Length: 199
Image (cartoon, rainbow, N blue to C red; front, top):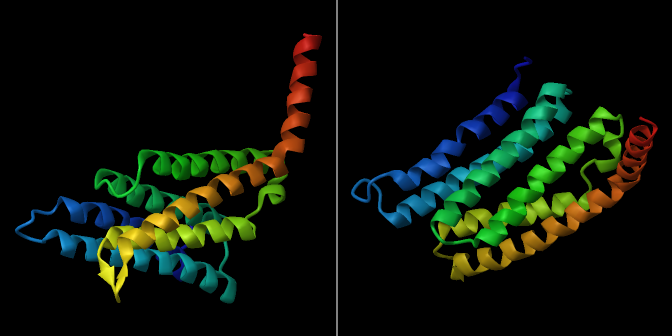
C-alpha cells in the first residue's frame, strides 16, 4: 500500500467519521447541543477540505495511485453517509432524502465497478454534473449539522433548501450516468440473453 501525504489526508478523512457521529453521543453535561452541532460541522468541513486537498496534492506532486483512486471516493461516501444518518437521527433530513443520496452512491459505485470490469470506466467518469452535486451536498450537510444562525443567516433553513437541491442533482446525475452506461448494459444483456437461448 503506497503511503504519501495525499493518502494520509484521505485516511484522516476516514478517521474523522466516528468523530462527526460520536460527538452527538456525548452527555449534555460534557457538551451542550449547540456545541455538539458546531463541533460536528467543523469536523465535517475539515474532512471536506481534505477531500479537495488530497486530490490537489496528488496531482501537483504526481503522487496519484490506484489505491488512492479507490480510497478517495470510499472515504467521501462513508463521510456523507455517516453525516446523513446522524442528521436523520436528529430529524434534520427526511428518510426520503437520505435514501435518495445514499442509494444513488451505492448504485453509481456498483455501476462504475462493473464498467471498470468490462473496460469501459471512462464512460461513467466524474463530470460537471457530479461535481456540482457534490459541491451542493458538501455545503448543505455542515449547515444542517450547525443548525443555528450564522452571520444573520438561518443555517438550518438554507441547509434544508440545499439538501433538496442536492437530492434533485443526485437523481439527475444518477440517470445521466445510467444513460451513458446504457449501451453497454443493453449490449451485455443481449449477449447473456442469446447465450441462455443457445443453451
